[in-house]
Length: 553
Image 1 (tube, rainbow, N blue to C red):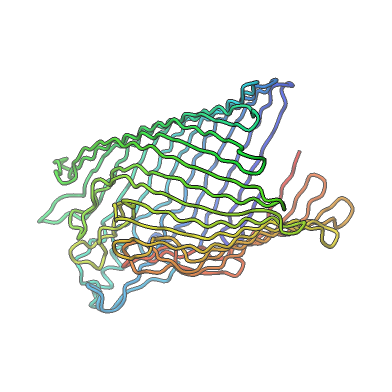
Image 2: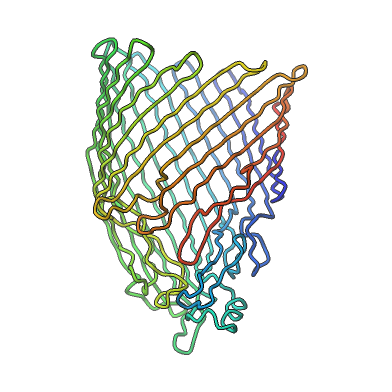
């Protein structure tokens, strides 16, 4: 059980394991949560944008006999998840807002934007079979996700907009009733089976096959205020996307000497994507040619990798790897507003990359294990996220921008990574620490712009300490730190990512079957910008703290 104080989150999780026989076991798990409050307040609707509630149920049955191990999982969940939460901010002198306008960073005056409703259902099967020839492993599953979201695309309610206009602000022609309702019904079926040959001297091998199919049916309904010049209530925009993918793959490894090993890998990928978009004006259902399109395309690629490993005589390993990679092209589901300065491109092409990596890993003393690696990746036809240039301050297209994928040219990405893990006996207890530090960079070769969402530095530290306290009781302390510095938000924007240093903490005690703990997330109440556009700023969550009780039976 979990209770969070500021948001009044109540969460209950339970799991039961039962052995039916020596070969068959079942496991039943469930979760329920309810969070009526939050930090992001909608002053127009008088509710919290980040409130949430839901439940999930899961059942598993496992059969194991001799060399055969099978597991079947079924789950069902219904969730009401937080809606997008952004503050609205415009600098004085901006087009349409000569006096400027802003809301507090955790306040919105949108007249639409309920929590997203989502239903998730899954069936997953797993199998492992061991024989003298090797081990067959596989998994297959079906997943369905039904989602409904609402969004106020103008970011104003009528009263707030009227007030701003009365004081000589908000001169751009903005309709306070523009909104979107998105419905998405997504189904996916996948399978992955591979056979790893039994170890035979210096030789090893693996062959496998994976397949994926998805069918996504989506509908967007837009709303607006009818006028004498345009009686439309908005648009009805249904669409459908299908994705079929299959790929055989394999690897061969060979131990050239007792210290030197090599492994080669091959993978052939075939991807086919189909998309249909339609547009109709409400309420007449008159077709909208600009919103109607139909596309299909097929992509394929053969990728390879070569890995070399050498065991040094002092318990260290050095390694190197050359690999190619591929990401299929596709279609942008939303065509955006027809008034956009940068129209959404309907399609984008595959990107192909070649990466190089070298590194070393081994023990540093008795208690510390270290890994150091360096990599560089060259990418052709890099797929970057851009937006269509709409904004509430844009008199040509005064609505929230639409993001889409586009090929933006050649790119290069590089990085250095250091990780370390340590285990010690300390003060009568056990201390475990895991740390990582990385330096990375990347840019588009054509423009020199930095790759988006790629901080200059990232760092992390995880510390866990457990110690007996009284009798059978054991106390514990967990600290988790993560931080990043530098980088840019989008590839077509000069907006820098905010630096951040986040610390989570948990302290508690376990005795017999009971665990009691108190926790705080974002202990120092760090505040940073998650996303920023011409008129929107989305901030991180403030500090959260609560208590948990766990019981094992």
